[in-house]
Length: 205
Image (cartoon, rainbow, N blue to C red; front, side, top):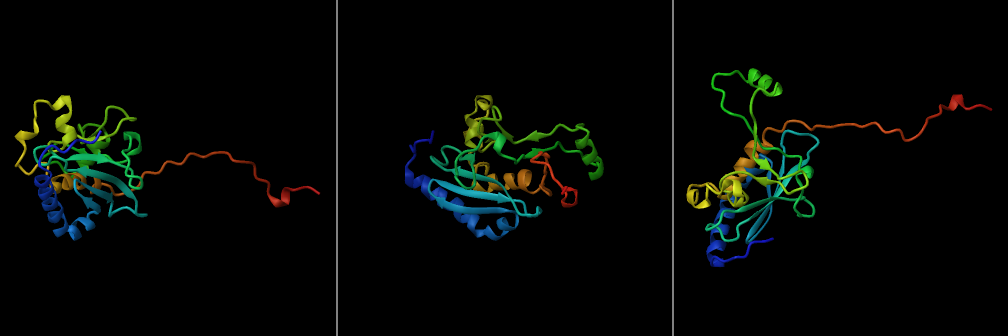
């Protein structure tokens, strides 16, 4: 259910416009990283994300970032269908935002082997109660994180003014942990018998 605007709308609108203007100033840099602003109309901004490394090109995710009551309240980040803009279930979002712990002095090849062997604990910033439920960005500075009962000990006001929760912070995290690591498409083929073939020369008189 959408949150009602209780803060003076003009205050939130000015801050929203400032966040969008800061994005537009670096829009070219964001485009090269696969981040595109489709529409910005207070209180929300609609973004799509694509991996610059993958061919054929594919949309990896889309988000609606809502700045209602900003910045008394942090922005809401909702993953949506890029065509309908309706919220998606976790099972329909192919994106992960994985983070590994620091391993100082470990060669990249060894890190890759450790991850493949499940010897390194990975954290996914995208969480959901179930595959049928909407995913949310589990990260300080995001409304869904601070509204989750599991994070009641980490209120937004402890982060407000730190830079966490600004538009650039949210986009940079999605790019760093979600989009930038993608370098190939995972394709699974499931053969299905649709009929029986007869070669022309095998057809009798």
